[in-house]
Length: 120
Image (tube, rainbow, N blue to C red; front, side):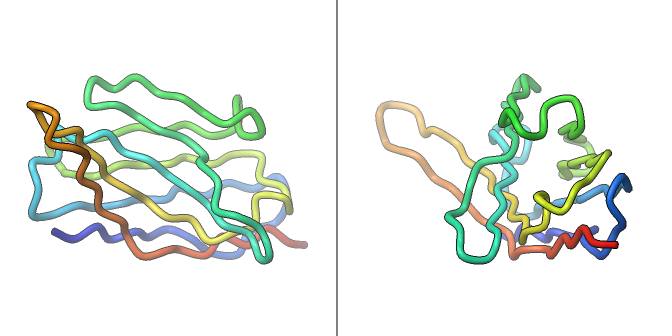
């Protein structure tokens, strides 16, 4: 299983980026998908999630600015980030998670991080 995150970079305040996370080796449509971020000196925080049924949730600080979507045909999840501000600077990580049936637990996979830097 591999999750490959991409799309990070340096952007000015108010700018936009679109992160992608392409998955392989798993039944993508069955997984809930997540983006986390970790800023220097801070704990990793959940940014947004999308269920296998495409229901989305967002942390309050990104509501109205970030949009999470998935393409099950392309095995890819996207995080569109608009109106970026310096507080969004962090390494962003994607995760795929599935709750196994019959109480067999949860399985998850992480992608490598992609750096997002918002600075003038």
